[in-house]
Length: 384
Image (cartoon, rainbow, N blue to C red; front, side, top):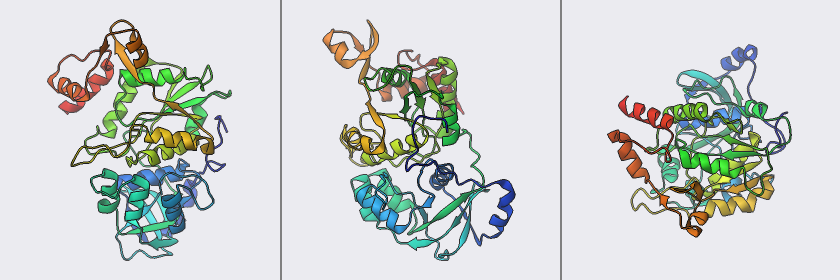
């Protein structure tokens, strides 16, 4: 298999079944469940191996083990439990469920367990808080059903999306055959100039070999309510990919639902990117972090995710690349803030709030902050 790194757990899981075997499988199902956006992302990543070594939704033993120890029962590190929730009292162990999404038949599930999760424990251990001021805790406590279902799945069809999501096998096939480092850049927002400079700067890190490449791998599934929709984000990535046309940068899209679980989610992202063939992972300040919906206070420290990722990198068989603190200067363009301060350079800044105001008003946005192609897509989305 092309790709420089062994998948998590030793093998890349593929749960998709040939079309000619599907009729009998579908006929064997006694119930149909229409998946939420979040669950559809989980089903897709299970089916294509993004969550390797998992072959289905977590059993109660696996769920509690991941919640309590951040590892599967056999000791394999895993950041967050992958669960299928329901409030349907009629679903029972032994049922075969046809899973649909937007009316499409995408998978079947063999229900081997039905259990009541320990949501307070899950919240506290996985999100670091049991407060519903945290959007991830809100999700597990207020959106998810009262039961979790366990069992293997069989993939029938990948969901039809506005943004095509390459499978781990497809991404690995895109990577160079020679032994090079593959540095993953995760984001959930449009890529602006500072982001581009950041992941290109990562190729010069001390632990990244010359001639290596960056995989820009944005999540295009559900995030926070006030985030830009995945379909719009996808369009910004596509126009930017064409604009920069850089052979050192590979683009792919991930059907992942953000949990905003800070340090735990950093581990989850590293595992996923390992399955997609990445050897290194860029860890930014307050990665996958979030704030209280009431007070606005951060739930995680700026370096909590970096610290946990660094501590677990060896166990994961990956390396981390810290997100460099960069600043745009009038004299030298983008440099590290340390260099800018040491040389007394004139740094320029534009806040996210100010950028959004300029975007809405039609005011010209400086190219040092954002790419023209990206700004054009964002403005068109506001008008639609």
